[in-house]
Length: 188
Ligand code: AMP
Image 1 (cartoon, rainbow, N blue to C red):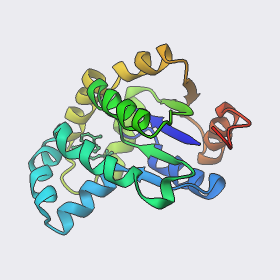
Image 2 (cartoon, helix red, strand yellow):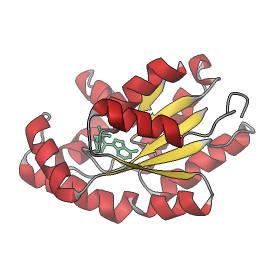
Image 3 (cartoon, helix red, strand yellow):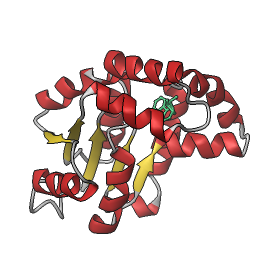
């Protein structure tokens, strides 16, 4: 199963992705985690990403698409994966489609996690990662609505979009996600 978790920052994509890893037995691919690791290690890529991440902006496509393409080619991705935080723009979605096409594959489902903006702000203000002050958090939400939200229509028009309410307990949301996943997907 090749799954995309879509939704604004603070929607709970990372938390749900971790649970799905155990349930489905496929890896989570989080571009945010990969970029944070690259920053920690101060690799060329990490240095390139740093200023964008600090400002709450998207890291340029060529950087992100490159790391995803490399990651999807690794052995543990052969049975599928959970994409968390990628794609984040229509251009990234188009690049992902090309990567998949080249491998004769397609996305099984895109789960959009719906959470009201005020709730997101509350959650993000509590969670506060390094670099996250309120201005950066607001910028990340603005960037989401401008660049990432159009993906909802993109994937709806591709017939793979599933909508899930992202309010409630972690387990309640997890059950909703499982309920939204197509069955009989093992060979798709
Ligand atoms: P996240 O942990 O997914 O919220 O990502 C943290 C930060 O990493 C984002 O605010 C972006 O600066 C950067 N980032 C993560 N994924 C992407 C992506 N797909 N495209 C561009 N930038 C990304």
